[in-house]
Length: 555
Image 1 (cartoon, rainbow, N blue to C red):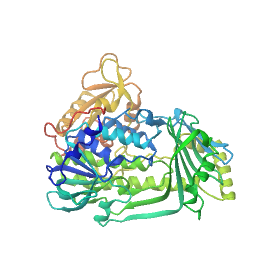
Image 2 (spheres, rainbow, N blue to C red):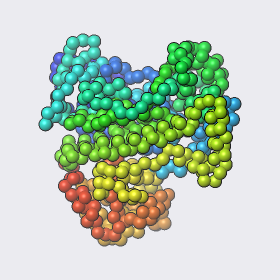
Image 3 (cartoon, rainbow, N blue to C red):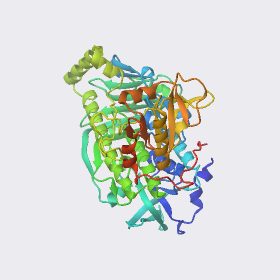
Image 4 (cartoon, helix red, strand yellow):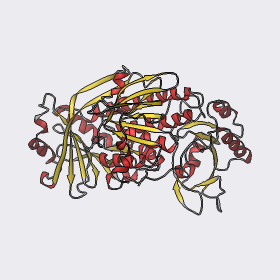
């Protein structure tokens, strides 16, 4: 895909109004571009408005977890990042003398969702992949060098005035909904008079990105010394990132000077072997917008929340926002769900993001403590905890990043009961569908709602599950145990790893209904599915023909 095809909109005259679109996305960073890809796959006519004339050339976000990688997979972009995607192999906690206080071997961690538990990336390469993905769809268009001047909502849609940057030319776009993905300084958020509630830390971080000629050294480390605190990661085979906390009261201009930067990184690499690509100063924010939806406008990513980087969840949270709201928009737009479904976006995402921010704050307080006495005491404590059976396992299994569930929203009963499977993220093992091929489960399931029955489920249960799926316009699948002999039928696949059978047994359930974003809507035991049927009746209806587009890989 060449640049002219990617920027096909640039040949338009700015004073000629386009056709009405379903969704207008403001901002084409990673979150906006991901939302555009997900909407494109659903057949939603989408316009993306981006102020800059080209993609951002520097790495800001650097990490993705396994859930974010699964969202990439759902967008048909799995494996497209190539050399710009780097799995985390070992995470070490280092003191000032580079002695390891504790470590996590990521190669030995369980991968319940089918992807690396932690990985890094080079943001410009990721954005290029996402933009190539958008170019797959004739019904998704990107306007660069444009910004939203104003917008007005009414009962049927939203009218947006889009201005060409640097000129007075503008055009009016009519859309059903608007997604604000325009970052921490969101223009849309200001125009909606919304506030980011929370705190900003007094400390700053110096973010240093360097190019390397070789893939070594392959650091992924928390820096826990009294003198140097922060984080180091190899974000690609040819790139490293240093995030070093700046001492309170330091001259923020002086710390960016080349001599100071080289002195900082010299503790970890030979400055003569790398090229410094960018040096930026960042603040640590813990903030959430007071409202995520105002009428037909929704806020996603940094426009809706800002969090400290200590768990690497900032971009992951934005991708979850996109995965959550886009399938709901597609359903409402094609008439298979009511507009009230969109209210669950904030209900589900606010609680999730709040918990991530709390965990990230706690990690920051623990790992980034400054001062000789406190830091040394903390490091001794880390070493002690690492050697104890329970706490050592907690560290080695990287349980500092907790698993979160949706506590309320579009789930059975609307409120999650304690330890219930509803609202949890469903696992994704490799399964066998046909001809002995083993693939990640979501490749078999496709998009949309899915009804699964456990291995060994009765014929009555399977029949009722198929009937429920037909009412939803979904597909029913029977999960077969690995001990089964013979080719699976067309509506079944084999649980080769035993992970799905274990999930059903652990929760003592026979049937599970999965949402399009692979969170659990509800479960049932036995062949009677009346509770599920009542909860879904009228809320989710079969989609009209031609609702979603076929997944196509970028390239």
